[in-house]
Image (spheres, rainbow, N blue to C red):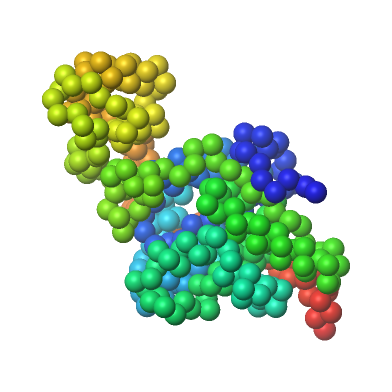
Length: 345
């Protein structure tokens, strides 16, 4: 049986294969997105055909009562992508809602998955538990079935490699199951995707929470200016047992050191760790150094983003052009699917 998952550093470049990845437009992107996926996308676009979906339909599964939020964040997501180095000449950025073939595939695939199987999906179970304030005790059909829609996203573009975090692996396995079921009934038509795992994993929030996010108020955004970075970093969680500057600290439980490992070079991180443990480095000085490191990374991203903020038509044109190209690929897939299903009237 072929590999179900692979580490990003182990995949071999092949321009005949496609990467499929995407983001829900529910807010600006933060450093969790940057280290978790965006940096990888920039490098992968030179090695594969890269398709990046702005998943506005999926965003509506738990924002159905706030469509303005989703609509307003579409351009924000695209600008964040472009500002970190996604090249529209190398990557296809497209809008999910303008690809009707995805919705059509979702309907076809819904016949191949039981409700019980969806309810057992670990990722779905976790997310439903987190969204009780939205759904109460009655989860919508759309949210429960979003893994089916995601399978349609992937297969519409014959996505071979799908960059995800460990927590998203059950969704890729659900897609693989759908592909196998479809092929067993209608003949070999679709290809199973392979999950690509990032070497960084999920990035923690400033408060130490395992998840960084807008609703938690613990995120550093790619568009944050220097003053905002200062304010956020100065409030970051440090070793609570360390009272005085010369008290020995434990960098392993300090979020400032955690971010130094992301933004500061390895040799300097070693010095920071040793000085902290010996009580030779105060938290304030450590935070100020981190502010400089963070800003060094984010400043060129901010500057590039400013250009796109001032040129919204260019952003829209990139998205519409990418969507047009993506639609052509999805149409080709649909022709194959309908032929296999005897729907090619």
